[in-house]
Length: 323
Image (cartoon, rainbow, N blue to C red; front, side):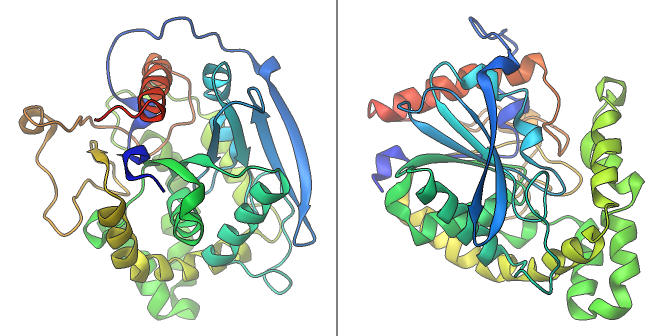
């Protein structure tokens, strides 16, 4: 991968940057189409928008979301980019075979996503990775680095300091999955936990549509989901052990890195350092920081602004500009 074409953002692309309104961005679902293809014998659902001959942005969703989380953003970028937003196996509208018949590991999710891009004839792309999308996307990037034009990381970490105390329940589950299963569910798959992932520490919880977490909770309570998600949670420990490898890759490819404000699940921290200072102190640096919630599933003026910013950043990278 051309090192000048690497763009790394973290935690708040869709909820940061400026207060200026996005110019010339119209939101219309008519620009989005919906498809499914067979990968490894299961149906993989994906949303598509934008011209097929435009630069491709592959949008990888988080837990317990699906490509639906990108629905408001897709029309805002479809005028310049070819957008592919898939659902992982076991998520959204993709097939959800039982763990006994499908390997629910992040390695395999990455393989499925890689095979999807191959089937769609996509040879290079910008990786937009949110939450679970980061461990999936990092694996894709390390296995086929020549395909990656740029990366955008949102609400995800590649360092243990970025895991909040909420992850203690997950660590206990990794150590004793049988005994700690119910505690894990209470911390990650309950209705209140699902709601908290959306509103986080936001000072304006009244601005969040409750349908978002009600819909996600309905997804989490579908038959078979408890086993699927518990299996993936157990495998998440492989992501933590992979952090040094991902950090090494990021150092090798270089590029500009923006790390933004913290949330309750993945508090802000730099790899190998203590958590970063508050926004007020960090305003003096080249990093842009702002407190946000974990979720990006609602359309806001900030999200429109981020669509404008994404257009600018990728366009500059394509022209070889330096950040």
